Length: 206
Image 1 (cartoon, rainbow, N blue to C red):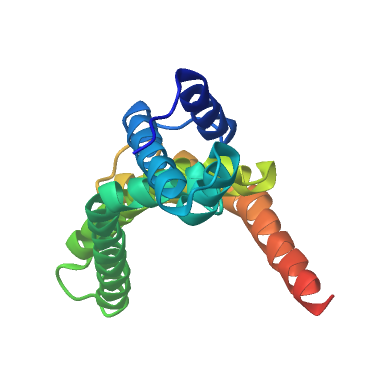
Image 2 (image 1 turned 180 degrees about the horizontal axis):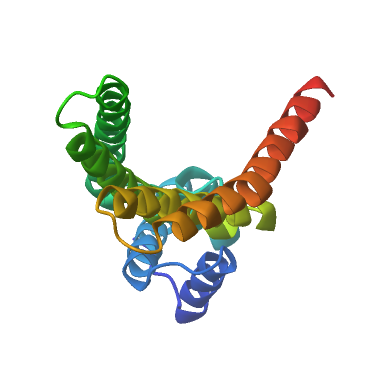
């Protein structure tokens, strides 16, 4: 079997590096894979390095080396992402259930209303924190208005929730926290949120 020269190996490595920042371990694995593929193609098909080189990249990474890195990242973090979604949906449901039940108990003056509301707002804070942590990973891929919306939604939700919890425990600053949360919600989060929905609807029509 034909062996690649050092110059040819460097050419392959330069092509891999053109696709952006590749994990060193993945980079070495890809380099070995390309070299084996090219050497086998040159030997079996009796073609030169350039032709085998083009074949290798079209067969192994037609959309670029970064695609393999993204797939590898997804596989490595799949379990973590699944657990994160379980936390978000689980605590989100618990928060909605406890807050709605607590409000109903409060309206009818049944015992346990304060405990339900307190637990519900606590679960809401956990949900919002999990959503923010999950969003931060991909935030660099979105526009500035999306980032502002995410942060504003988190701040508003936490302030309203903590203010409500302070109110239940008769602690100071409850009204201030709730008021600040409502200001952020009504004057920052909601305008951006509905403006983005409007832009999306216009984009779909065009």
